[in-house]
Image 1: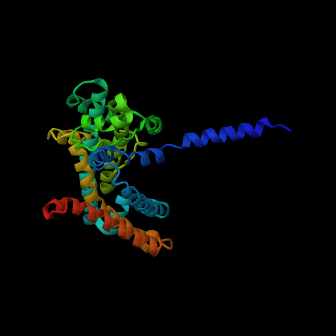
Image 2: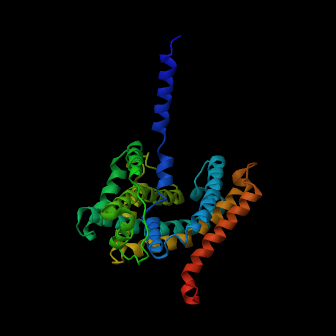
Image 3: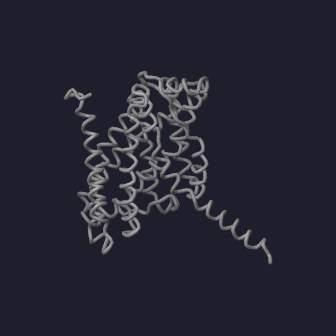
Length: 325
């Protein structure tokens, strides 16, 4: 019996499987962007592990959202912005669009600053003049690279993620955050933190840029997607470049990197419930889902996530005025 042929087939199948893995990993990893890293640094440096329980709360909430989104995508075969436009009209779709754009632009600005700060820490130079080159380089990657090439580059960058320690101190800059890691990493603290910032920014920013262009394209019915050539999707790529330009303008506000990252997280917490509410409604809508709507239990869980996320966002904003924080 020839054993080489089955082994060869298995190896070939494995190689095809490994080559096919990429977009889903990049998309998932992009959520671990500098806004989350910076917020964790600022909070963790002051409270240590006292808020570790939040991870136990967030994980199932994220799982609920992913389950609902996956079922809607699998059944309706369309994106959230397009479904909202078709089902509820331009008014509601415009509200969703604005909520996504505000969150994305602030996050892009924050992540660009963070990535530049990381490069500055590694190179030992000021980061202020690195923001524009970083934004231009990433926009160029999306404009010049083919979809498969972009995914391949970002996929291998996932190996560069790092983590933060604690030092019970106030974190107001990238340098402060690096010092918070020193008890765990010693003299390598700054380099580890800087590498993590750069990696998370470079992975997250292309996803944020492309997402911003995609939702605008969906609202106006343009050709969209990184698999489209520039000549066939000029509006899509125009918005992609414009999003970087607007984000760079925000960085001129001279807000500290950590302050910008925390602000982006808070704004995201306020804007996200809008999309969650629309997502759950679409997931239970028979005109969208036909005979396969999500279960009542999953819908209730989805509403709970929207209330929890929105509630915590509002509490963070009005808490100081009420003396809660």
